[in-house]
Amino acid sequence: MSGNVKLIGLVLALAVFVIIPFLFFGDQLEQMFTGSGAISILQNYGNFAWIVAIGLLIADLAFPIPTTSVMAALGMIYGPALGGVIASVGSIISGLFGYFLCRHMGRPFVILMNGEQAVTKGEQIFGNIGGWLVALSRWVPVLSEIIACMAGLSRMSFPVFFMALLCGSIPLGFLYSTIGYLGGDRPVLTLVLSAILPFGLWLVARPFLRTS
Image (cartoon, rainbow, N blue to C red; front, top):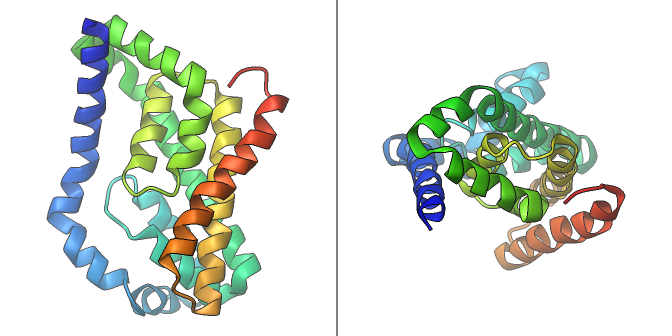
């Protein structure tokens, strides 16, 4: 029971760490990137807009960047295909950063603060359903960063994490890039597709991995 309590405390602490920037910078960044803000920012960088966009998607680990607005802007600038590729790559790199940063730097500190039992419990959870958590979390703000970091802290199998990350990030990137290109605004349809596509891809992919 104490291991479960400590694990919950660890998740809450990580959530607070991720949410704090939203409290300080959320409104300002949302105003900057919503509407035509994201595309205006990227267009200022000309041929390097794609690099800036990937950097912004990675920066979402530490700052409340409206990533879907950035992905939609990529669709407006580069079209749904190339824009989707760039958006997917940025989301994938962001997830990898969170995973490896916490895997190689955060675990000793977490063990010191929460004990080996809590970390072991987290490893068990991510060993059982980690793939589902990673794949489905990519379309949820804040939660995607928390899950990627928790996967690293729990030393989730990298092949499983990476495949799940692909299943979540690729449909997300192409979906919002296409929405940006078409200029559509259908929040309900977007929400449904963002949930179904990662679920379906992971359902297909997981039999090819030894563990899930």
